[in-house]
Amino acid sequence: MDFDDILEKVGSFGKYQKLILYLVLFPATLPCGFFAFNQLLMSGMPRNYWCRLPVENLTQEEIFRLLPNSTDPDSRTPNDKCQMYNVNYTDPTLLLQLPGILSNATTIPCTNGWEYDRTDWESTIVTEWDLVCDKELYVTYAYTINGAGGLLAMFLLGYVADHYGRKISYFLTFGMMMLASIATPFSPNYAWFCVFRFIVGGGIGWSFTIPMMIAMELIGPAPRALMSVIVSVYYTLSILLIGGVSYFLPSWKPFALVSSLPLIIFIGFYWVMPESPRWLLSQRRYDEVAQFFRKIARVNKRPLEPGFDKRLPEILRRIDEDARAADERGDRRYTTWDLFRTPNMCKKTLILIFANTTNLGVYIGLTLYGPSINENPHWNYFLSGLAEMPGYLFTTIMADRLGRRFTLVVCMVFSGAVGIAAAGVPVTSTGILMGLVFACKFSISIAFVLSELLEDELFPTVVRGEGHSVTAFTSNFFTLGVPFMVFLGYQYMVLPLILFGAICLIAAFFCLFLPETVNMDLPQTLEDGELMGKNMRWAEVFSFKIPSKRRNMAALEAEETNPLQIPKTGLNVRTSMVLDVDLAEGKVMVHGRRLDSDDIPDVIADIKV
Image 1 (cartoon, one colour):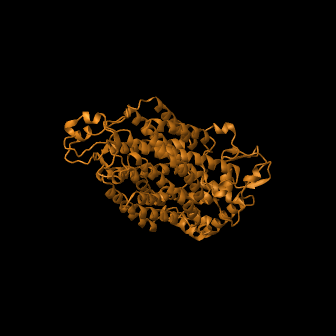
Image 2 (image 1 turned 90 degrees about the horizontal axis):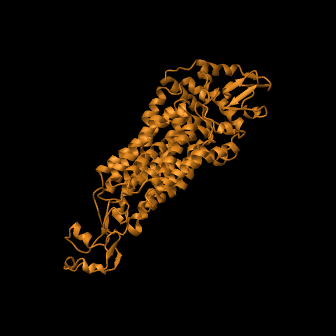
Image 3 (image 1 turned 120 degrees about the vertical axis):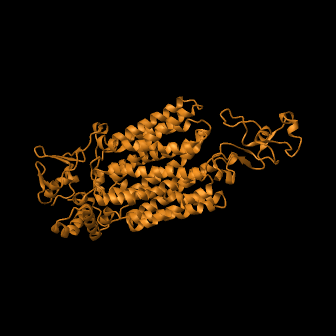
């Protein structure tokens, strides 16, 4: 009997899990959406801007007559945004001398600042600190600095999650983001704004990952895909909600406060959020895990037999000791290096890094890119977020019935094809481009959910936090360049979509080498993690066969007292460790892979029953 067997016994997805997931863990991801995208809406670019002239009481038409015309053929505005004529604008007869006096006049950069079209925004950091023309890239720098914050905190928070608990890691993350986000609107200048956003960026990824990690460690295999979808719906709702707040508060400082300060209520979750029982088990806190299982059994109305209840701490101790013996690690601490120490675990980690980087990068890129396509940024932002919702309706069905791998690969191929197709769209066809963005956002959202789910299902419990740290660090590092890719759209509008499409197609190929995880128990030890998908043959790489489901509890309990003897091997094993045993042939299937006779001793974690 292992951890998942006990979880099945007390209810792997009963009333207790549903209450905790729907009322605590999933709502705990809402701050992630707020903190991740309020900067995008604080940094809105006005539809038009022009040099401020040292004269007053001029109409808009008269101002544009006194400014150079735009030389950009793709410009949506008639005026040059960064140049003014080198003439005496205080001359009261200047308008009477038009256009002759300007025909031979030279142009110079704006010397008196800028005026802004306030149609969409009353104020943003762009209008606050004149981040236009030669400072146009400053907004992109701020996005990159925000992402860089995640690099500093990623391994620290992953270490805290694995060594001090998932719960402590979450609230450390939340407190850090909350304080810096509240301080943001009080930034005296652009430099301080970047400092505060750097700190906020340090916790964005973990404010989503930690609740998701605890959720996956509380439930059995069957509902994992559905739970990944539901938590993504919560996340997307937070994105849509913050877009609505921005529409009604178009001034960036009040918006920054309103999008941060109310979230302080989540501090109250500290007293209701559970610690991961799998993490407690890895820390040898057997009595706490036993009490936790008793609570689940009581709430789920699945009372434990008195004898089993009494022996529960001892059973948990044996499960943990067997797992440690299988890993041959004893009391040594687990580190990030354990993800790369064995060949199969290393391969899976590298692929997950690439997949997560691609999905995160394309997702962020499309979110930044969408509002710039046409003139209504609020509407574009809302539609871009809404495009994610339909995909979530299909994710559970596809992931459970077609498998994680198949769904992930198909979605990434579709995103890639849509992005490449943008090469044939004229830059003036903004409606078609928006359609391509929505289609790509639809499919990449599904791929993003599945890549996060695969991380939870492929990384062993003892290094799951470290695994998330590695993928989050590397994906955040490489996606620091995404804002600059989006900026290329100002030179050639469809170029970002083409780049996103090409990257998706490459990543889709490598994802074929990941094992299928549907219906599989979460790996607890490094040995468990190494065995999943080990020695995949080429036929398996291009096969999308779904592993069989777990057997019922009666069979699992029987194995505790009746170990199976496998002919032709001389080994006694619990069949809960394997998925298929052919007694006639002495064949053992582990995680969907047939073992040769030489392999069998390597995968039997507990021969002496």
